[in-house]
Image (tube, rainbow over the protein chains, first blue to last red):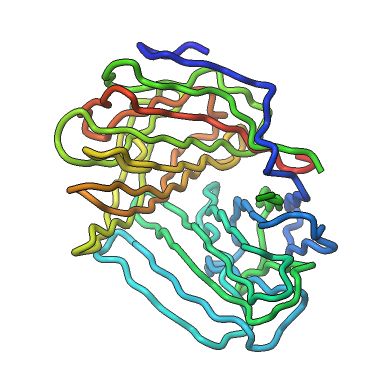
Amino acid sequence: MPIFGVTASSNMSTKLTDFYQIATTTVGSGGASEIVFSSIPQTYTHLQIRAFVKNSTSSPYMEMQLNGDTATNYSRHGLFGDGAGAGQTFGSPTVSYMNFGFGSITANTFGVTVMDILDYSNTNKYKTSRTLTGADYNGSGIVWLFSDNWRSTSAVTSIKVVTTTGGFSQYSSFALYGVKA
Amino acid sequence: MAATYTPIASITLGASASSVTFSSIPQTYTDLVIVCNAIINSGTEDSYGLQFNSDTAGNYSATGLVGSGSSAFSYRGTSTIKLDAGRISLSMSPSIIHIMNYANTTTNKTVISRANGTGSNSYVGISVGLWRSTAAITSINISPYNNQGIASDGTFNLYGILGANA
């Protein structure tokens, strides 16, 4: 592979063997009100969701529920920078959803999320997620780091993602991966 | 289930350099991830500046958040000539830069990153950036944002992640 003034090597055939595809959903021209990953295999150590999202309304925020639990068994904390000064934090100890991240509200521009759900199949621990998310609009935008918790020892078998209002626009995509320790 | 997170290219600097470039990037993945660990050649610390497909016009922007241990601040770049992502300092500074949906030719491209450093110029930072282009990304040039150069022994690894049925 040509590199300017440096030594480079290329290996196109070797994969890191601990990161696996599970499922991908891409939103079509009609949009979508929710994204659901169900029947999640219990054979990995952690999950990662990688999303590329445009929301259909002016609300950029997305929420997530696990195993269909709609009760107030979640808590969430976040740290953000919006270009206007020091980052700020917020916390919500008992809510009915986890943060999923930030979708874009501007045409042709997409927000992104990289979320890790740690020890998702463990039946002795509450579940914790770590999320890096944000969108930039050339003059405005925001970047977030979230850590959320689901107070349940159940293994995670399904994940539902929605927007706070409206739904997802065409070309939004959500990919679920499994990570083995 | 198929394994992914495929190594595409790896760069280790044998001498200081002004920048590194990944070119002829395969268009067969969903996302790209750059994992880098390097020392700045002069000055104290800075962001990396990314340029895609040799685009040196003001088509980039970014929003970031940095904590130094004594203070936190947020910053923004608008219509810049580089995309701000990751950070580099006087000590080895690991950064992970995600370039999402890089091969699509319908939307602008969004990049998100996290980074940290150690030593006298410690910090932790996150940023999100935009390249206002619908072109598929075929090459990436990486340099310290204000052109301070990269010291010898810096490493830059490029991976491709392919979603299921993508």
